[in-house]
Amino acid sequence: MSTPTIGVLALQGDVREHLVALAAADAVARPVRRPEELAEVDGLVIPGGESTTMSKLAVVFGMLEPLRERVRSGMPVYGTCAGMIMLADKLLDGRDDQETLGGIDMIVRRNAFGRQNESFEAAVDVRGIAGGPVEGVFIRAPWVESTGADVEVLASHDGHTVAVRQGNVLATSFHPELTGDHRVHGLFVEMVRAAQ
Ligand SMILES: NC(=O)CC[C@H](N)C(=O)O
Image (cartoon, rainbow, N blue to C red; front, side, top):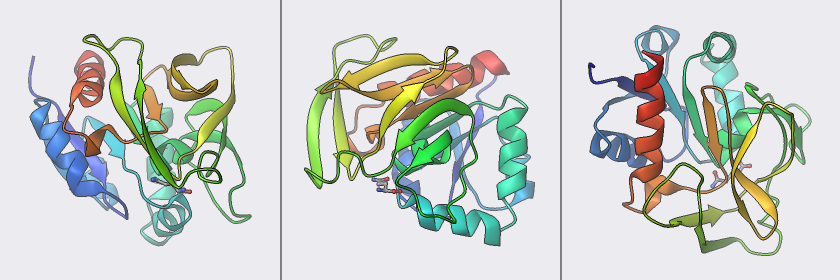
């Protein structure tokens, strides 16, 4: 099977770290800012950052509808933190004008962990990832408040859902791209391969 080309949405956020993690997980990785670039990738990562800014820039760059269209058409997508927010069908504690792409039938609460702790790390067991828990880095992180019947819960922390998958769309509240452990990116690269 050929090596998949995976884009990282490069409007805002920790793009470089995802490019490095994807390359380490045996994908060809490149930044994506424009619809023409989106058309050329087999899968997409939406990075951590600030979802309100990312949503605004997606409108400015004319990316909102092209992104929605590709998610709807089944392109594999993986969102971390702000990226998870972007993939939520419904959002709590977002800004009034904040747009999401949707893709996962879930309600996500923005900054849910952030009120108590700005940032923390915790070992997280992720279904489908062998070799023990991953180090979860949570930075003003959202959690998943509820999920629809077709959504698979892959991980929880403190009783809150922090990793989910629905079909080709994967999302985590935490940031594997900041840890040097590329197993979650490896899982996503396998999802992209399987969809090719
Ligand atoms: N680390 C992150 O991506 C933080 C997400 C941020 N709190 C937001 O609302 O987008």
